[in-house]
Image (tube, rainbow, N blue to C red; front, side, top):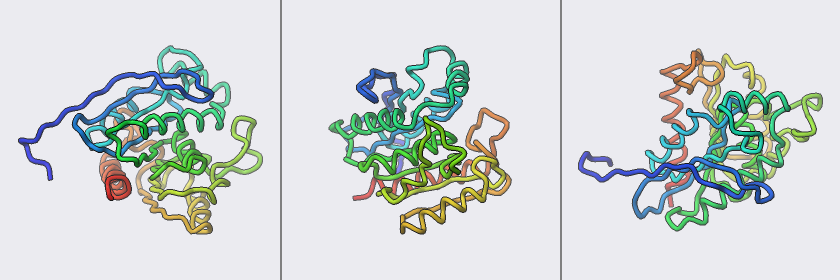
Length: 253
């Protein structure tokens, strides 16, 4: 229980990370000060890029007691504003799934090597980052918990597959070895409620541990307080679901 006489401190900074194929990329790192041990989180950013919302959210997770790392998945595409870099990436059809898995895996390994991390690291992603987080949780066995916030194209038809996205993340679900939290808006167009139903059926088919929360009156990106799609009531409840889930699976013995 928190009391107002407790010490509280945080370190937050940009670091360099050896990512996929040992390419040096940058990442935003934040951690609570103290001996720990603390659980870890890797944040997988969205298509708007490695932006201020994700740096702010990295600090938010640290404030809640998580050693948190958010790799810049668009590092190789250049270093303008997040919006300009993201526009370039979008025009090129996104980043390759295998490259993202390599970068996220490297971030996870970096956290697991820290002496003040308790050996449990989860993934959190929104939008395209939700898709990538689901993909990585299926392909990286060390992931201890997954939070997918409105990840689009987790289920994909054969017509939607591309050379950069050759397999739908849902098709790797048999290999998923961690519990899943899904946060979705019922007015979203990607994923639609029907696509969320499809993903839920896949998780049921393979007997996976999951919980989905679906919000009326909310569409895509309803956590983004700096955008018109923000929905205060649904976002506050959604964040409470996120931290209850992570505390259960990453802070417990």
